[in-house]
Image (cartoon, rainbow, N blue to C red; front, side):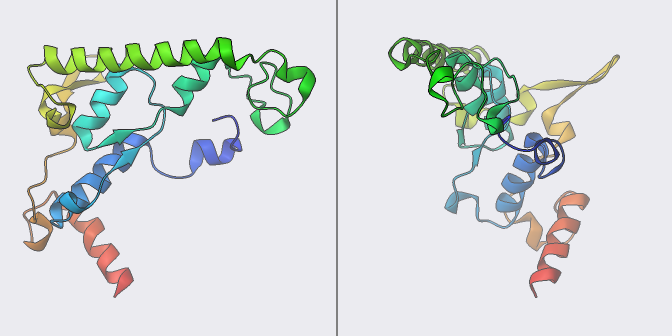
Length: 185
């Protein structure tokens, strides 16, 4: 959000797709996925963003940015200054007058309901009845002006327990797992 310093927003942490697949795949590869719920956030705005996150391993999606936009956020990037012109992220009473919760709550509720309906329509159109069953192979991503790849080609599916058998998991994932194990030993 605009509340975080830009250095944090732009350069700290992992991008959602890479971070989500790393966490999910590590848990699957270590036979721990069934023990952990994975909750993701980070520019989840549309129904497609949610479905893609489910395909990559999320159990739940948080959508702060979308709800802020539905509330009336104009992304003025003044959240941390107490000078938000829409009154959403300020304690200044003169600026807060633009935020009328009784009126704005309808927009947020409506956006949320329509987004959830749309997500389920996408899931159903792809032939599934549960977002948790949406596989990586069902989504393509354009990787250049002339090429698209399925998500399972970009992020290979890891078999349960694969990290316990050398060479059974994708090399990069196995290297990360081994490096982490060495650091904690």
